[in-house]
Length: 318
Image (cartoon, helix red, strand yellow):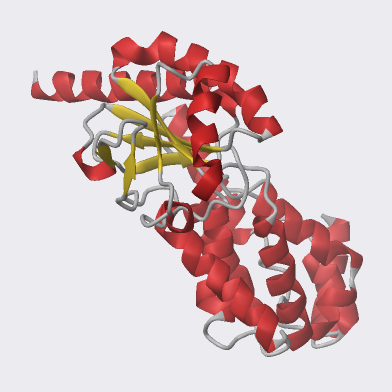
């Protein structure tokens, strides 16, 4: 209590000075007690803590960027206090960046930092944060320090990625089976569709296929279908079908587009293979850029979640 009282007196005495800002930013605060069940109380405590965690930090003061505590606090706020999904992260990013705008260097540093962070994120689905920053900041003229050619690339990439973000309805396309029959995504019926872009000469694809072959066999009775799209074109197109046999992919619905008239690889922003996406019966993208070795555990989780939702609906109606 004595220390806290002394700190407050220093803050009052040195208002407007960097010294006061540093003291204030590192003071602790108490989380009040809440009413309700244990789960409700814990949730309210978390929300209060997150809402007030940065109260003492003056993000709009240019001096904050030069302090050792700012970066730790920002990292903790984003990585520990914000749920790991694009929607939640975007809200936190907007809150931080809005507070930082008066301090131009701080805003510049963190806008660039966050773009790089989510452009290279290892978490599934956080490319949505990259797209959010690119379209709502870079494309709106809020990053004047970026060279024109770099700015165009950032915005172009974001616009290409946006249609296949988690939660979007997958872009429609028509490709072809080996016998020439058309495959159109929007007309294809399955409870869950796994879309994989691959290439016969892709080493990572060779490693991924055994996982997907086992996956298809395990979940075929749950209405899950794997649809492959070979990205070879022109004279190399024939290697798609020999590749299907070599990689034991015969249980998949295998397609390709010899002349890429469908532009399917552009629509899905295929920069490397394999690229795996999971969709529901309405072709809404549930997950994207999934590692093949994780498909089993992910699908199990999805089915368990859906079963729980169905049970809750039945109980409500009952």
